Image (cartoon, rainbow, N blue to C red):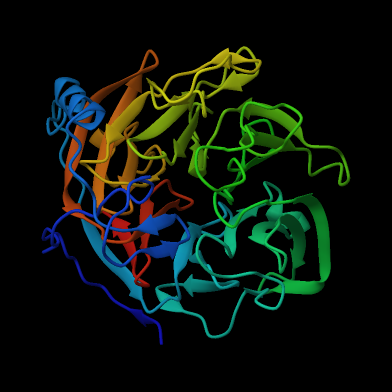
Length: 401
């Protein structure tokens, strides 16, 4: 049952200790739960790179705000969803929020109420469990006229599929499905799963390195593989080959374009020490190499020479003393908090910490830890007006206030 609420809850979570690094190669006791964003476990306090990165965050202005800026709050929009992993709203439908549920369904919150039934149900086609499932949704920029939507899911074989559907405005039409991209996945994790239209009108598909740990087959730096890449699809030409526009990604879990500037922000989940946010300005000169698996964040991970492209280091990173799985977000462009416009919101799945920052001249400035946590944070969302939302694995949808 889904319950819609008007609760304005700005109290900090009464959470226990932060969750531990899920990617450690050491043996740890205790229960490990594989989720859409990785293994959830207990966070080990980092004394090396993590401590240095935490100090760097403080040095760049963590916990401080400038001028009339003030911290974000949160309030519950609805509860009771089944493992929600994304929240989407087309700009032509300001009264509807679409919630992606990992088992393979999409539900709609309309005018503050959850609509009965499903907007899309592909559970029979989806391999669900751990990091697999229905992971991404995007509406065509011309959705109001062509009614096309795009979904990213792992199929019954565990492989990635990007599929286009047509809707009747109220639900997706099952027989309209058209496969646009299929990518073999050698392991069950690091599927990426996001979809986002860029300012150029192309659909961007972020893929992880294929899984396991440490990119054992070196796919992220190999231009002969689509894994570990940011791809660009021309949906206006179905059947056209994807173009690689970025490489060196481990598991891009949520990326977005700033609706004002067109800049690209990527949350890329780390291996055992560092979580990172990568930044690519709209006027990027060309192919970007985000470094994995030669670098984890800005720290060397393996020896070797990078593949092609301009090597890009993170605009923001943090150690596993602050969390274990980065959740990329959005640049706030709403009207409710004018002083906060231009701040990028991100968080961490394990610790529930939410940060905001500004990117100025390619550097993170005014990094701020927000005064609340969202436990089991899986995704952020943006509505037609630029207001932001967040989803928790426990089934709760929040609005940032």
